[in-house]
Image 1 (cartoon, helix red, strand yellow):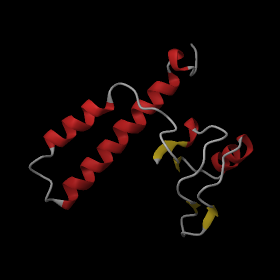
Image 2 (spheres, one colour):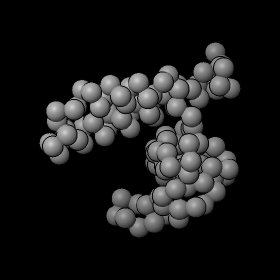
Image 3 (cartoon, rainbow, N blue to C red):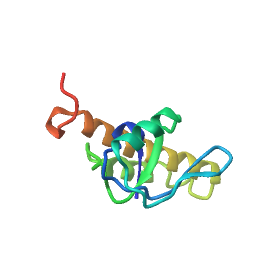
Length: 113
């Protein structure tokens, strides 16, 4: 499972978690395969991130090193719930950033200048 920005979603990817409204009401169930029109509709509803099955967008720029560095930086703070949340958010940010960079690079078939 991977959390990705909606801008990186492609037709054929499958949702790993349901998409819900702010009040918790499900809009789309997990397991649904994305289509171009569904992605457009989600964008129109203001959905900015989704969970998809597998590693749909391969992270680049060696995120393992970044995560290892986070583990080292937060090693003495694991017992603090707030710091654990900060570490989790940073890990998620680095993963999404690396995936976005990979998708945007010409070598990966992303946007070209």
